[in-house]
Length: 264
Image 1 (cartoon, rainbow, N blue to C red):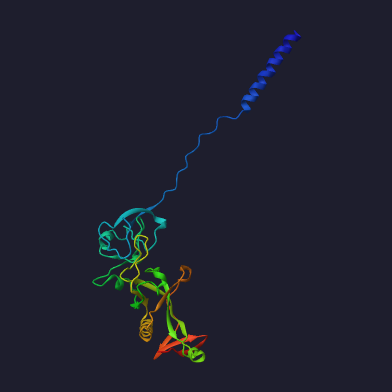
Image 2 (cartoon, rainbow, N blue to C red):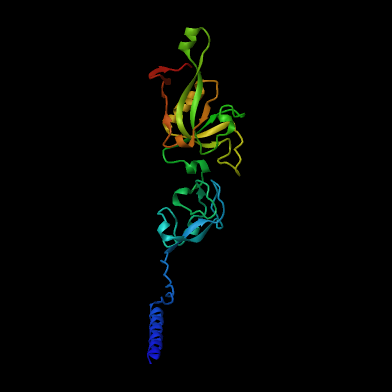
């Protein structure tokens, strides 16, 4: 009898233990709940349908509408909601700078040239374009590596009267006239073509204000040597052009803090 009770008790204990283990065992992992992705608002933006070099006239196939995240749309971009007829409106405009395929078309990068030429169309208000003579071998223009859009310093060679009298031999000096001047064109070229440097021309067209135009023309007239263009680093090309010397009757050169008339 006692033996039967012991067996029954052992079975009961085993059954209880199995039930306890079963109930304590973790159940199947819950199925993952799909998270709804935030909805991105889109806007129809006018973009370049192909590469558009600087000075390209926009035609019907030059631009197309593309979806663009609305949060990334700037006020300079052309949107279909604001200008549904923009494809027609931009026809006949010229590009101030080059556009890459898929790049948004912006108001500030287009200009209507009217009946004038491209240089006149891209000149900011109050600025003038003036051509100066260089030489056709590139000796006076950084070896021919200056391209439209670069910034340069304009330097001329002149006879230093004081040093010439003191030494008894002719002494030449380099005189910076203008600094950080924007080059609009080299020869007849207005931009780099297919990654190749522009062929060196006999003149360079510079963007100047009216007073600087008078100064540069006077500097050209006073000397027989061509003016030299000194290429500036991109890091030093910010801001506007600056006048290093002033003109008043003659060319006044500022050297070591003292101003004196340059020789004619």
